[in-house]
Length: 240
Image (cartoon, rainbow, N blue to C red):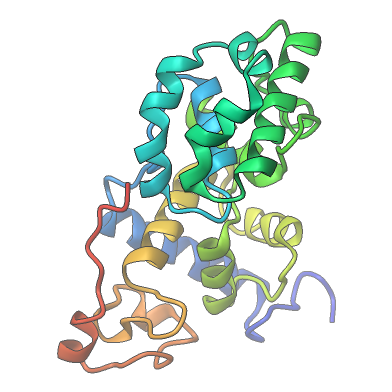
């Protein structure tokens, strides 16, 4: 089918765009305080925290970073870090050896190529060790105010469940969802989907009966539709 009419749900392209944007507006009303749940005070801190968040909860990362950020304040500090000491500090986040390699390599690259400063362009960020498009978009959207779509596990699951895409590759999900939602909304839309995935639209048993998107979601009924039963599945957060 032509690109302008082929959609995962069989609805017209125009109908999909309208439905996706209405869903985003409802999520904006539902989660007016949605934000990045990693604690940070600078682009460098957010970059390090996002690297640490791979295969780890934001809550656990936030337990580790206060001591980490107090000890390492600049890219130069990370670049010169004692690997064993750094590994021990970040051990609770899991995969600490690989993450230490990425953080040290990232910091060395910042010092060598960007004067120790975190760049504010996607094409530069993704050249840094341990930094893919997801991490780059987190930093761009939340530290620099540059719109970006963060395709984490929650985002990808919900985008497919909503019928916004049928892709599983994060880059393809990012591209297809980006065609539905205005660019100015990308960063906040990412937060909203992630918050909704953590709180209501769970992987195994979504709380369909209390979901504000029920009337617009093609996957309605995947979880219990009874309001009382669904309410028991809601996780209110915060998760930071």
